[in-house]
Image (cartoon, rainbow, N blue to C red; front, top):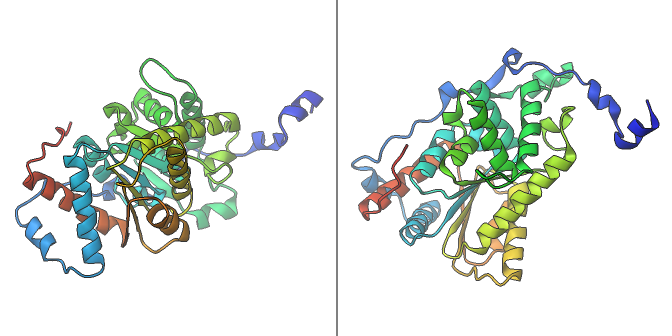
Length: 330
């Protein structure tokens, strides 16, 4: 090892890690199991209204009413999603709401970006950690590590077609690749529609950080750019909604810092709606999304694969009943 190499690469052994093609891996989630997105149908509104006005029934109806009011007023809605939301087959639901103009900004953590990339390129995701770890193969899918490294690099570059940022780089890469399952990729669809998509990474926490191609400077810069995109969004979201779904730490912390930046720069946020939807109460999500920010905070507990389809259908049914003209799905 030369002195120059030692000074620039503190852990050169990383270059020797073994990777494998993703097609050779058993994945726990495949696109065949993903949700469908039916049109609003007669009778659902009556069913929704029949839910008891007690506890979660009150909160669910309140959240739906607030999202509907937000869209009728032309204000923005952001969904910050944890990786599990994609793992349980809800990408088609998010994409449908993006196409209809209900969702204006998608935020993901690093794990969410990984699942989104694997779904788009392989139609499957979620390796069996218990099976892979003892073999020294957990996290070493070649295409995933190399792909996310390239997305981060692209995210550092602003072009005539797109702004810089990790999420924009990821979506642009998948479109450029013509990935076979792009119709199930949140980031690719956001790029196609011109909707904001941001990725917020905790360095060392994601499997792709073990790949030799991972460049910390690219990952860090692309993530910081996306943080500033979120700050800009929050600064202008008074009257809008921020919905955290299934992320316990990274995205709640990101949102709280963005709120602080927005208020510091003079933004008025007294009329925002924040919500945390998860399978159990988590300290940071409850505190940083629901309790601390200005405006109205709502908590709903439930399985993502059940709660989000109910939420979607209720929103679309009420928007339709109020004559709101959704963006044409395409």
